[in-house]
Image 1: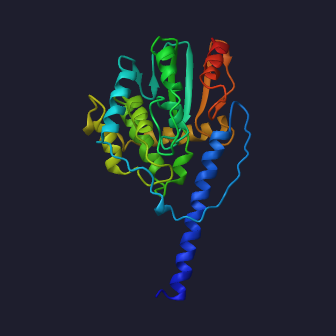
Image 2: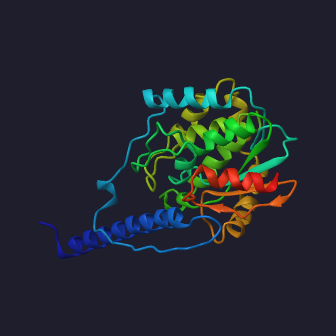
Image 3: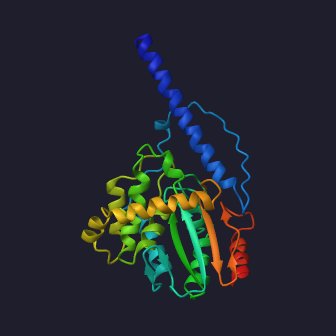
Length: 280
């Protein structure tokens, strides 16, 4: 039988786990509820006394049939589109679509993934980013730029996870394959708040990218310039998003800059189309 001291410690650990679970839910709710260009947060937090280890979430297996399906989808989506760093599309495209994201953000992957996809939280992909890439980026009307903004990764027990995963994507970008890495991670996320961003997971994503030089990718992940770039973007994103919410999409063009689209807009894909039209 456990001693009184052991019982108290067990109870304390359970309370801490429940608080962390509640914080994760609150942050996800906030990101979903921040819509359009206004910040309107109405979060009701219900503290559920459940140890996080009882909810490990969906295991991530980058060698699974689901991963192969994701790889096929991403390769087809991006095939033939020029890439440079974190920019997808022709540099001369008149419209720029800038996405501030966190690669662990399960709201971001709703934006980024096709309607055939369901994330570990049980949410269906919107297909909106696929449409933007197909209708605007592939046709040369717009380019898509990814920038880092830490949100969901702050819930990861490994506090280095955000920088590790963002640097992994940016290192792939040095070989013109950054968006392959970004899209693959969104399509192969684990449960938000779970400690799934391991070295094996990051390596597994890289191995799915055709033509990526893994030796160079591994070396480039150590570049201080990449972490400096990510830190600068993170600070910029906090300001642009009104405090730090992902996804935040900023669309600019010859006629100026549209209001940021923060979170998942209630009007769906139409919100992006209208914003693009307003700056063309």
